[in-house]
Image 1 (spheres, rainbow, N blue to C red):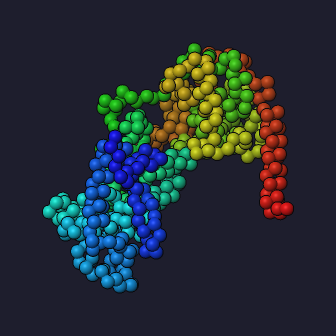
Image 2 (image 1 turned 45 degrees about the horizontal axis):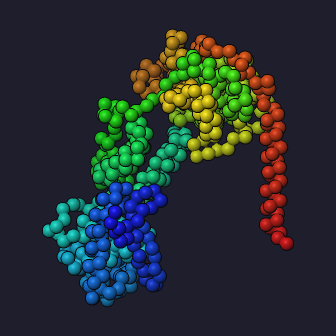
Image 3 (image 1 turned 180 degrees about the vertical axis):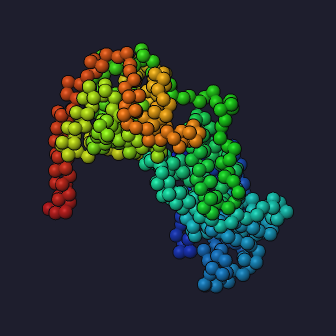
Length: 498
């Protein structure tokens, strides 16, 4: 491949231009400006166009210095006068805060390339290269376009949106959205939100497709951006278009890519016998490893809903022993779930009571919060176990317990409204009857429904000799105390060095 000067790749594989420039104090800076593509051919064309314009500028005898910052400020925003300012502003219409640049001739186009470098010094980021180059062409060579209205930076809109969404989104949902928005910003830059239109969103989508992201996840990422832009429109932050630029970009179920869509499937009886068979107790020797699959099997709860439980969330309400799930994905997911008789028999309630008596806050106190919640290690352990027992179907994962419980409950002829409340499914798609008249079903009715859930398994094979895991928790507590003493000793040594 022919090497192109200034063309580099960042750590994400996105092609960038490496630009050297000097600030008003003579200090040289080195910056990478994203070209917004991982396609080598496209990147070479863009870089060659930039280099051609840059080198033409460099050869101009009367343009032998890089402009200072004040040379490119509008007169109304500038206190100090510059000898060349009037000439520049007469030829240019510059709004560097948005990267909007217009020139009226070839010579001005050369000067415009200098403005790109000064822009970086002013705002800490370069304007969109394709936009700047197109708008820098002489009037007769560039398409007519209305400059977008000034708006907040993408990151500022994201911060405001997520702050509001904390009221009705779970922590995990907020984290997932933040991750998508960070990826988007990293790929296209932290520009004013009005600078993002359909072409930029198509570029983002195309990059995801080239990375091999499957339809279901791609649609989820697009959906998160769609929600953000709709919120920005409703709150007056996005005025570049009346509708979200994500509109129409999601992949439909009937598209060719729908064949790649893989939903999770419930476990069969034989698969459940393999999971809860010989070796389970040895493999799942920690409380979270042991209890999460069993609780999920008899509640249909999500992995992170169980892992995030407090010890006090195991309680008795209206005479019914319940699990109070408070950290669900949505308002519907925050619910009271009756405890199945099999869980009681296996000692789950005793385990919770022991922790309450010990004054522990969390049901699984040894777990730490991660980017995706507290159940990540338990999920990995379970995936390893599926491989060990010969279950290699990628559609069979921990979340399959949820599908299994829901499928089996419906097979018993259970009231659909009961199943929805037990599993925390939204009733939005079920019409006004479900939304208005079947919410908050009595716990006794839910308990009777859940008790019908059964599996042809011998649970004696997986019954823990000490369901409270006292020995494990004592050792964990001892290790925590040792670690705390060690850290305190290190802290004191740093405060009082010899």
